[in-house]
Image (cartoon, rainbow over all chains, first blue to last red; front, top):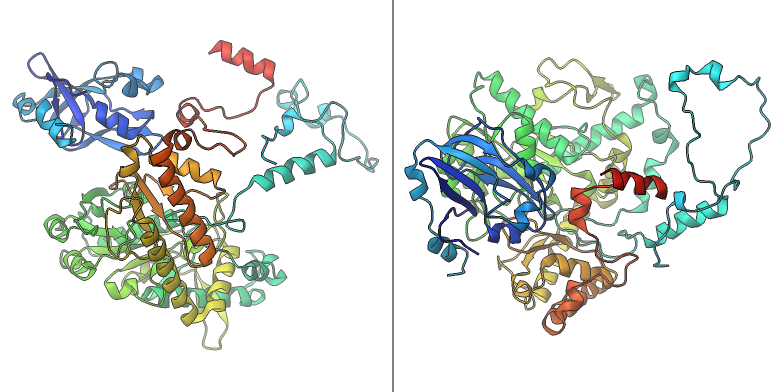
Length: 127
Length: 496
């Protein structure tokens, strides 16, 4: 449940490179299974600036409320409005319909600096 | 007894009555003359119609399903669900306290003022600090006031640029929430391998932007932070202040004092440490005690004593942060806490904490063979287990908590603190007898054995409660906030 083509963070976000400088971001299958049923997602606004390591969204599950950290410096281009009415998409399809935001990276090289699938698997003890 | 109880709206029948009104002894006026038509409903409200006996049975049946510390152990970590002595209620029920009006002249409320004056002194003595405000209505309210004082203090010294509050990653969510509410940026400090604050990280993160640090000690893992002196010095050296979240004060009464540890502000949760009632949304009280440097910023009024021994409310406080509560706080709660402190005395309060710590360590050692204990050292008044071992059998901590209900025991706090995987946070309190501690331990051990033998029974628990496993996710995602008649409900569902 750790797709090869994606990059990851230690805080359990995934990134998919789209075009030359866009990163689609969500949380991993492992993260959603640890959180349990997601009941609410607090999304940023398109246009918001994000900083690597800074919180840009909040995911609330039956267990806990968790900050979602931006893996890169950049600007929010689009957010997944479907999550407002269907937060369960994060549980059902974390790498697809459960994406959270599309971020325009200030420096596209930031993508390559994230964990690879193999490194993330090791991080969560599934290597 | 354990069948589901229908709502009052689902009970009764048209025409049933619980009460007959006497004949009206004033001239009747038409409601249409008294109230403008736009405010009048056209159809009568669909209120239930029941006899008095039906209503009494409804509430008595509900009350028999209620779980309270007066029924059994309530080991909810971080909440200090101790027994609330009934003498507290007697004191609060005295007519001279109960029938006061906040606008009464001071000379007619001397007893109430005297109680508040002495309660402030007691709390200051317990905190090791100089002055206190009894006004905050809850712990989080005390936190907000404490942070406002920090802000006012720095502003008075021309240091408005200090906008960061340091908070450990094990903290309760109210700490960062209060800091954000007060306009501060939160800097999260990681815990070290012993469960305390990482001192190196504190030293690295303090500086000219530091307004203060918020900490519970013992912390949310139930562990005493042994580095508190070094942490306090690092924060003070950088010009910041230290805020003590008194959520865990039940571990330190008469043993150690936050003021002596270097804290500048302390809030107490009277409903935890000082045995005033929990729950029901209040009323509560979260007094804060502060150093004399911060005292000028405390809100008005304060209770003061004249040379002739009489008491008065001091309203002239030019540096105060402003009102944070109407009148003088929840006075009835203050009376209960005062009664508790007076009933115990200094030696008795120390024994409260000694027994709270002993009980927690006893339970921790009884349960340690059956559950993971991530921080294996003497705990204070509470401890945190991890359900990691059980998770490998497909059983999550939430399942263990639900299964406890089948044993007739209130579950501990779960999934907090966040830094422990599958956390189970247990705080037995000093008031539980040994037999109750043992019964709780036996239930937990039996559940641990069930997880090995028959995990399905645990995963599908509870089995002996009026309702089984509730769909928490659906309740949060699609909350139904009011009852509707069945026909209307169907229509509403279809609309959606």
